[in-house]
Structures are given as C-alpha cells and as structure tokens.
Length: 136
Image 1 (cartoon, one colour):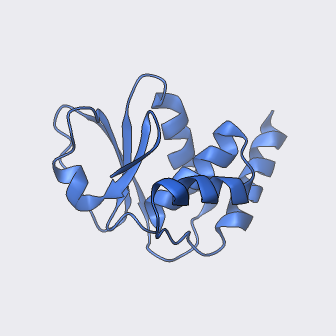
Image 2: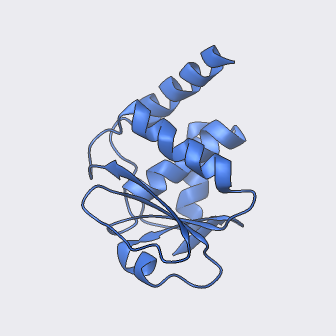
C-alpha cells in the first residue's frame, strides 16, 4: 500500500483484507474481488482489468473519493495495485485536483513504481473532464 496523498492510498487486494487502522474507507475497483468492510466505509466500483474504464464507472469512483477524502483515509485497491487502482488515483488527481494527465501519472508512479495505467485512460480522463465542465 502506498500513500498518494495524505488521505489517498493505492494498494492490493491482500492489503485491503487487513488494512492498517489508519485506513477507514475502502474503494474496491476490482470486478472479481469482494471485501467484508467491517467498521470501514466501503464501496465497490467493478472495473475489468486491462480494459478501458467506462465513463460512468470512472465518474462513480472519482466522485466517491472526492466525497469522502476530506474526512476519511481511503485505500483504493484492485487485485495487484498495478492497473485499476492507480488509474483511478490518476483520474482523481486530474479531475478533483486539476493536475494534467502526465503529471498525475508521474505523481502516482513516483509513490507507487511499476504502475500500468489502463488502456485509453488519458482519453477517458479528458472526456470525464469535458463532461463535468459541461455540467457546471
């Protein structure tokens, strides 16, 4: 598990099974995994590994992080913490914090080396930003 921001971590399924006490919210982005949240706030947004993220699911994941990050320390996890969970963290940094895509990828990779953003993520993030800008 690696902290990307003081209240946002990216990790693996195994880490979500027994997270440290400092983690009080879990966001599962692995379609094939389930965790009993116990006392922690929990949400599942089922993403398929190494496939582009449908915009509605990307929005759901980013919005959930945005809605809870001020008062919770969130662990976003998938199976190995290499593709889906770092991709969601990158999207969050772009959409909620205004980082450009390449800076967001570099930021996540600096804290969690070896990430592999999902195919089409740059296009998906840009589309999500356009969609949200049109709503405002």
